[in-house]
Amino acid sequence: MSVPIQPLTDYVVAQTEAAETKTASGLYIPGGAQEKPKVAKVVAVGKNVQQIKVGDRIIYKSYANTDVKVGAEDYLLVKEEDILATVK
Image 1 (cartoon, rainbow, N blue to C red):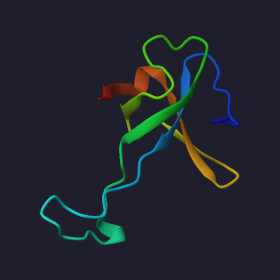
Image 2 (image 1 turned 30 degrees about the horizontal axis):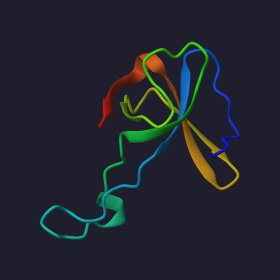
Image 3 (image 1 turned 45 degrees about the horizontal axis):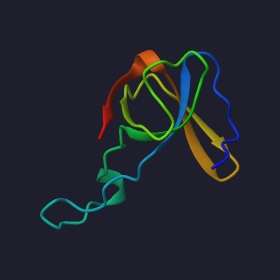
Image 4 (image 1 turned 60 degrees about the horizontal axis):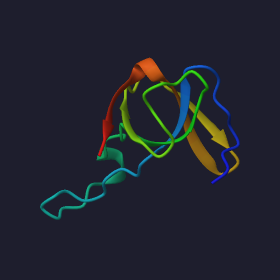
């Protein structure tokens, strides 16, 4: 997949995962009540990023990212220091 954004230095470009529309017990969650996901898949990394690689699923600080729309796709720019964990 070719990403139209090349992050600089210690930034990563990621795409958020879709919010859950159903609870574990099978109840549907209305759109306004859904939590904004804090998990995203990394699609590009800057040259100084050391611990994260393309394809990782990350948990990030929600206030520390920059939302970007390129064409029909939504992306996040997140500094490596604002990534809290990877998800297996």
